Amino acid sequence: MDWVSFCRPATLAVVGLAALVVVALAKAVYLAFFHPLAKYPGPWLAKFTNAYAAYHGWKGDIHLDMWRCHQKYGDHVRYGPNRLIFNTAAALRDIYSVGSVSKVIKATAYEPLVHRAPNTLTIRGGKDHARRRRIMAQGVSEKAQRGYEQRITGHIAKFCDAMFGTAEKLGPERWSEPKDMSKWCYYLSFDIMADVVFGAHYNLLEEERFRYVIECIDKSNTRMSCLIQWPEFARLKIDKYIFREAIVARNRFIKFVSRVVGDRLGKFKSAFPDKVTAGPPDVFANLAAAKDPETGEGFSLNEIAAESTTLIVAGADTSSVAFGAILFYLADNKEAYDKAAAEVRSKFRSRDEIVMGPALASCSYLYACINEALRMSPPVGLALWREVAADTLLIDGEPISRGTDVGVPLYSIHHDPKYYKNPFEYRPERWLEDDGTGSVERARSVFNPFSVGMRSCLGKSIATTEMALTAATVLFTGDFKFADGEQALVGRGRPDGEFGRHRPNEYQLRDHITGQKDGPILQFMPRKIGQLDSN
Ligand code: HEM
Image 1 (cartoon, rainbow, N blue to C red):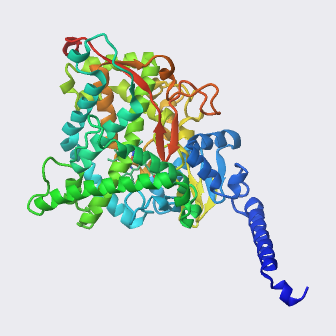
Image 2 (cartoon, helix red, strand yellow):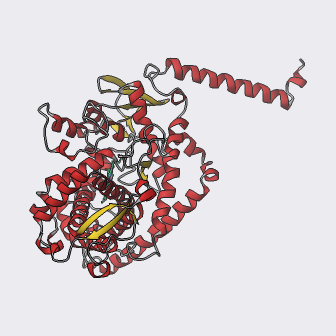
């Protein structure tokens, strides 16, 4: 072949392609046999590409797939070219505990979630995260919460009115129309968060107008859950051709939130600096007043706006899944239902008495029901990726090198028989009665629906209060049950479903960063008039 014909474009293309194939093959051989993670078992495709995880992120079964992988391959699984998942209490401590704070940072997987600038949830770690967290903690502290409580109970009362109707309208001993909890629980959690964070009233519980917002969050999260598993793909910016609808939804949501922030900022500016709060206290005002105890400095107005938005996004859909799961498992487990209802009805004489305090705190069976629902169907079920930032980090006895992404999948460890006997059985007693082998302690050691350590949920206390108040108020107001016929099956696993979705007694979630859900579809009936105040 002479030089001229060698340089023809077609020949060049063939040579280029051949070179690419050789490089790709060399890389594949390296990843499969010589990479430091090559010795760990895992799905074949995951050795070579994060597309494997992205597929399950998009499909919404990544929490199940991670569980299936641990069942098949053991406690240490390679779940990407440079990613390992672990399924032990030791790994949970080694990766997430406060002691690991300088040795791990949030992985680059979180990059697609960043809008304009990182916030407390998405920032990788270090001093800036610690500073933000110290200030944020004041906005959502138990003390601050007392200022929000009345508004939380107000929304819960509205929710109960929508579910039970007023006794006069419905009459005792008549079941309401079937109601889809996947929607109603979202309306409730969104109304609570918008009010608590911004003092805003969007009233999804009573009006149609802003209900589109929750659909936007869900649609946008489906795309995000694919991108966070495959950051290399996210950086190519070609997803906009694949996820058009999700991008439109995200833009609509951002527009909505910008309006909310703008309104609150307007109120704030008219009250600032003479008065820090305008109207009843909200997180926004508390963040404006909060100072970092170490440096004495607070947030800028832009930071307050960004962080408040994070709270709505982080708090609304997670809590709505939790409400749905609590109601599903109570409706599905008559013995637990009866015990929880009897406990609540014996502690309070009227709905107005159900507030944060010793009486609610003493409802230990109710709290066990809530924990058990969060264990069975955690709102966040996948591995929360962390990047090893030390030269070597010992995780569950394995030396893992700098730059590796590691995580413990929540759903998987919550269903591991090492820690939970009959893990797919809803049994609130497991949190209260030790079987003589330290079972309660074992169960607690890996229970982490809010994650653990320095990057654990800042809203845990608010969320727990919301869940306890909602469950107690609903059980006090009346009874609920699954709707009849096919509707009773919505949200359940099906015996002919894929492996992991085959258990009818399990509330099914599609894990798109946070869980998305269908149902349960429930009917409600108020307790007899007179019973409300005397039972
Ligand atoms: C049942 C309801 C909730 C569940 C199950 C839940 C779960 C979680 C989990 C697992 C994380 C760790 C995420 C990660 O590592 O990427 C997290 C972080 C976070 N959550 Fe929640 N959450 C809930 C409710 C809330 C609420 C109501 C708020 C706001 C008031 C909130 C605010 C946050 C924030 C700001 C972070 C980031 C903390 C940090 O990185 O330092 N969450 N949550």
